[in-house]
Amino acid sequence: MEAVILTKDQYNELLAKLEQINAQLNSKAESKKETFLDNQEFLQLMKISKRTAQSWRDEGKIAFSQVGAKIYYKLSDVEKLLQSHYNKSFAKK
Image (tube, one colour):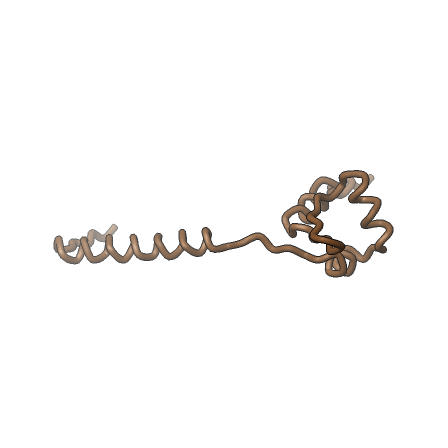
């Protein structure tokens, strides 16, 4: 194993750069906002009919927001719906 010796200034400069990188990563994580799909995008994504989407909303399978006549779904809620109905592959016999 090889040892590397840094001066105090080099060490401080390295720490400053690491803190800068850490700050950039944290700011990107914080700026990530929730994505919403309107009803038409949801229907196309899931390849379902309007009636099926209405049934899923009525049954509480998918959360939604409604502004006037417009309906919106959080992309994270769509992913949750898919995860909750996920089935692992069956073992071969």
